[in-house]
Length: 335
Ligand SMILES: NC(=O)c1ccc[n+]([C@@H]2O[C@H](COP(=O)([O-])OP(=O)(O)OC[C@H]3O[C@@H](n4cnc5c(N)ncnc54)[C@H](OP(=O)(O)O)[C@@H]3O)[C@@H](O)[C@H]2O)c1
Image 1 (spheres, rainbow, N blue to C red):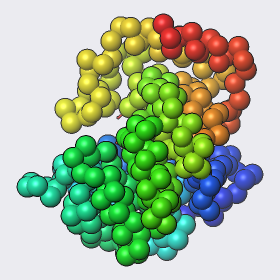
Image 2: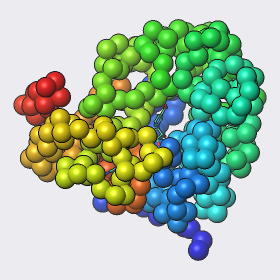
Image 3: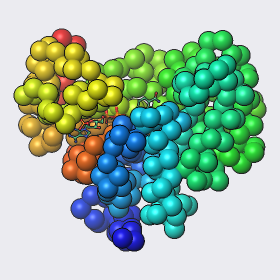
Image 4: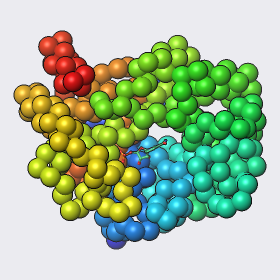
């Protein structure tokens, strides 16, 4: 069936109006909610399900899809599958989409398929473009810092890739505050400003508050937290055990059942009660809690089905927190 995008996708009077937030000091605005293809879009997943998720996302104003060379499993398959859907459904909408990919983790054997050399980054992006059938990506990231490659070489590779026209913007991911500051300075000097940083950030993972957010705010670099729902923990799904179809129950899932401890569930119960008082689902509250900080450009969610995506999108209906709510949340999180 030919896909025709919802004509009301940018309509601010629709039931789920999307908000677009400026990415740092750049000219680019990103949707407050972006969709990542780490899980649920690989060779082990169901084509019609992930196709429906991508369509529902775009139909609701999500213009940003995030990938990486190694997403799957098997590695590379999320990009391949996305390429098929790109061709089938999204070709007419390419200029309405911000598509990102990354390199930095193990992708192929030998000394050139991992970390942060120019050799690896340039070759990996060429492979990603082929898999996705794209001429360029909008954002190319270095996926994690490499302690053994000079930062100057890695940043020069990002600069080169932009000058070659293979990416419009560049970003870094998983860099600590100090490393990020250095990378941002080198990129600025090269004339290819760092657009965005992608750190792990959620109610359960708050290291970015210890300096990174300040660096990004000061330098005018955007921030797109990944795993904002702590891989699904920050939802109501684990309150009554581990459902069979959840990430924690899947052999290839990165969330392990051992992470769903009685202590975590007790904390989730308290957070869930606060969310209910606010008239939100726990997932919605967890996302709204991140978006209350203006330095956060977009939250990068995952979804295993359309209903989750729609639930998460509704976080935009209430992003305001009272002082009292914030204090109560803080008490639960610091226990
Ligand atoms: N840069 C990096 O190093 C890095 C690392 C990891 C991820 N990322 C990026 O961040 C993206 C998101 O990561 P993530 O998938 O871990 O994000 P997440 O939003 O924290 O977790 C998504 C998972 O939570 C569950 N879920 C989502 N919405 C729900 C809802 N409303 N109600 C109940 N359950 C819900 C689903 O899991 P079930 O399968 O249990 O249904 C879904 O797959 C990735 O796709 C990737 O693009 C980047």
